[in-house]
Amino acid sequence: LIFIFPVSIQWPGISQFWTSLLAGGTFSIGLFLMFFSLRKEDASRLIPMIGGLTPVFVFVLASFFLNENLTSNQIIAFVFIIIGTFLISLEFNRQQGIVIWLKQKFIPSGWHNYYTLPRVRETLWLALPAALFFSISYVLTKDVYNHQPFVSGFVWTRLGAFIVAILPMLWAKNRYDLLRQKKDHGLRQAKYRFFFGQACGGASALLIQYAIFLASVSLVQALQGTQYIFVFLGALFLTYYYPKILKEQISRQIIIQKIIAILLIGVGI
Image: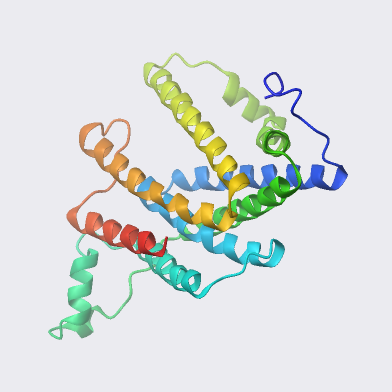
């Protein structure tokens, strides 16, 4: 960015400078929490969980700090998003999928033997702070674009993201893990996938930032929910055809549960 847009960067003033850094820094913190959660949770379950909560936080924060008021339709939409997010975060054991559980709940015969609700996944408690930090970042970013041109605001917010992302390199062990070379073919292939994924993520971030610049941050965040269907289909495809790359726990009951949850979130959106 420094080489491509040097003439477009403007000094925004000390207040907007710190706001820009904070907008980018909170985004990096949200990414750290999300990546940490992905070590323990399926992508097709965690990403919709975070993505379903983020618009709710954005609406609340934007109403306070950006005066984006909630309408009755948006409140109804929140209900669908929250229900869908809750459903996608439920954990059923292998013998008790969602369809079986619903039958046991609502069919009179033997219903009292299955009164205990399935526990909400512990990963939800990691998804909540990740969604909150993403929300803070998006609301601050909209404030930045309200006061700065797009390119200049984008560069300053990315500077904040870079500063926070590089902080772990202050620890020698992290620098060693990052820089040491391993002669491992599988690791080499993983690096290619990693860089491809990061390139896609970078393109996505640029498009989302420009969308926030153009329109309501609440609207942009709600529309991001369309990504869930791609996450779900991608995970499903890799699990069945390329399990060495990604293998998630897939069953008919899990597929039905995720489809219902994604549809509910989609209705909310």
